[in-house]
Length: 258
Ligand SMILES: [Zn+2]
Image 1: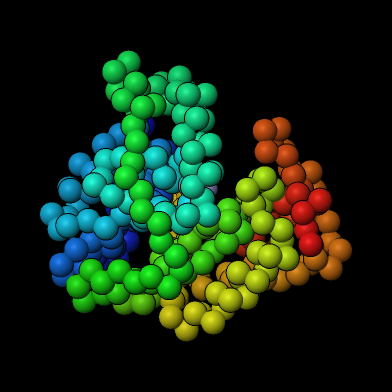
Image 2: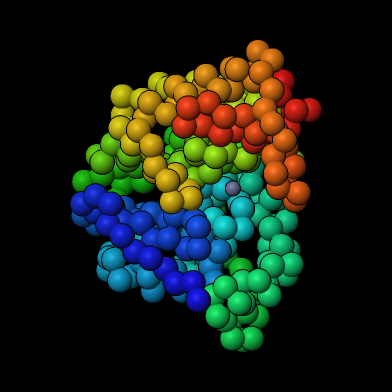
C-alpha cells in the first residue's frame, strides 16, 4: 500500500512524496503554495493540511498524470494553457492505469471510481506571474521542453528552483509532447540568467541538485546537437535514445533534435 511520505527539507519547505512523484509545499506568513499534486489517488488536501492551516495556492508544473491529477482536491489550481490538451489526454489515461493504481494505493471500488471521474477547476498561468504568500514571493519560470507548458517556481527566499520534470536528472524529451532539443536548449540558456537567485533545484521525482546542474545539462544538450549520440533507451513504451553526461541523463527522439 502506497502512502504519502512527508518530510521537511528546509524551514517552511516540505515535500510530500506520492509514489515516485515529489510534491512541495512552501509556507509563507499568510498563505502556502503547493507545487504539483501527484496522481491524486490519496487525499492530498488532507496531507497538506497536516503541514499548514494557511490558505493554499496550488500550481501544477505540467499536465502529466503524475503531477496534475491531485488538483481536484482543491478549489482551484494553476497550469499552463499550453499543457491543457495534454492534461485532457492524460485524464483518459486514468482509465488505462486504474487497476494498477487501485492495487498500488489499496483503493476501494468507490474511491477508484471517484478518482477516475474527478475533475479539477484549472486556471491558466504564464511565466512571469508571481505569488505573494507573505514574506516570500515565488515567480513562475518557463521550463518549456519536457512539455510545451512546463513551468517551474522560483523561491528566492529559500534560494530554491522547484522544477517538476522540466529540469531533472533524468529528463524525458522523447515524448510527442516534448519540444526539440534545440528549443529546450533555449529554455536552459534563459534559466541561466536566474542562476544567482537559487542554489538548489528540487525536482519532480525525489531528486535535487545544486544549481550548477544547469551547466551540465546545457553541455549535454550541446553534445547531442554537435553530433554525439546516445544509446537505445530500454523502455518499450517510451522509446528513445539516452545520452549521459555527468549528473544528466537525457532521453530524446533522434528525429527531434533540431
Ligand atoms: Zn512529466
